Amino acid sequence: MAHAAHAARLAASGYVRRQPEQTLLHQTLSKYWPAFVRRADEHGGLPEFVVREVEDYLTCGILEHGCVVTRCSGCGDEQVVGLSCKHRGFCPSCCGRRMADCAVHLVDSVLPQVPIRQWVMTLPWQVRVVVGYDRRLCAGVFDAFAKELMALHKRRAKRELDLGSMSEAFTGTVTFVQRFDSALRLSPHAHVLVPDGVWVRAEDGALDFRALPEPTLAELGQLAERTAARIERVFEAHGRSFEQPSDDAELLTLEHPALASCYQAAAAGRQLLGEHPGAPALRVMGPQPNAKGATRPALVCEARGVNVHAERVVDGRDSKQLERLCRYLARPPLSHERLTETPNGKLRLAFKKPWRDGTQAVVLTPMDLIGRLCAIVPPPRMHLTRFHGVFAPAAKLRCEIVPSPAHDPELDAPEQLSLFEPTGHWPAPPAQVQPPRAAGRHPWPWLLKRVFAIDITVCARCQGRVRIVDIALTKDAIARVLARHGLGPQPPPLPPRPVPGQLGLPGVAMH
Image (cartoon, rainbow, N blue to C red; front, side):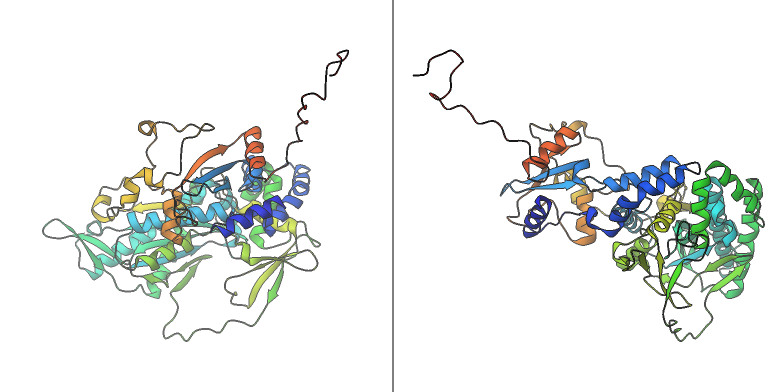
């Protein structure tokens, strides 16, 4: 009741604290995660990075595990906000923050104002378990596609622009590695943003962008063939087999048998611990979507299970549309709005768009949902955003192509974005010793204002400046903050003070 009253007071002032404990995802994990861990421990246990990801999510945004107190300098209104887990596996809040931050960074500081085409590359089903676990193999596979994609653009530029050599054309790629599909199946695939053209040196020495015509189906087929051959060489370099990866999956089973079961069930879209283990997950079917009237064949080709798609093009001068595309590519794997509970206690995961066969949702048991979440958690040091060519951080031509960061006076004045205010509970460090802001990492207040037009540094009641006045990290500090704001268990009342003239020491006469 205290939490509800506090939330109502904050809503009246224009701010609503995130309450993950009221979401179906958090409630499901809180209830079934201990049983899932016990089942996994019977088969070797889960890796530490998976356990840490899930258990830290269960504390994300929960006031009892750490909180921050903000105060308005005008009206004195105080708000209590929980701390986040900052993981990148499946937490909708933290992954959403990363998504927005990544999109803003790419649009403002990486992608130039030229036509950008989105390329998609998916892998055969039989190799997805191995690629999803081996981070070095994963990097090699998707780097192979990026290099073949840049080589295709250079070959086309040499032919279309009548260049003397492929080395006269310059291009680059930004690759997003997604580990999931709309049904939370383990499906490592790449979304790659590539300029729809190349840069060449002009007579005056400057780099000029030259647009290229739309790729043909023949060129896509050639790209798919070359990519499949190159990926096969990557598998061989790592001592694995591209055609028969079953032996490689057995190695994962020996290292982490419980995680291997999650990977295999999630990749195949099958039940892990449901009523019929090994059976396909239940699907909710609907009418097949009507195919849009197409005047030309879709730009899709496949070779040896490697599928390449290149339909969407965005004008780089339209920053809002480009930022929406980047947010889509960097999106979290799960949305609270698409997860609902059925009357029999199962979970219905709805899709944003129905599949071609009319599938609109899948129905999972709570244990099967947890198994799929464990499978899509990326292993440590597996980079999910990769840069190649002129967009690579160490590229010599990067400074001539990538846009200069837009001058933002708010970012130049960190005191305007800082929510910190010194108090007796948490002394602020001197301004001169505060570490500089990391490049490419935007302050959360600035990001909220940019993406959602919300300024959390200004009080919604009186427009006063909001500052952080306390940070509670220890159990005692957290209990003190929650008790002061009526959000936690109240301490026992103090004994009543003695009234003069009523009590005395034993053996002393009372007057």
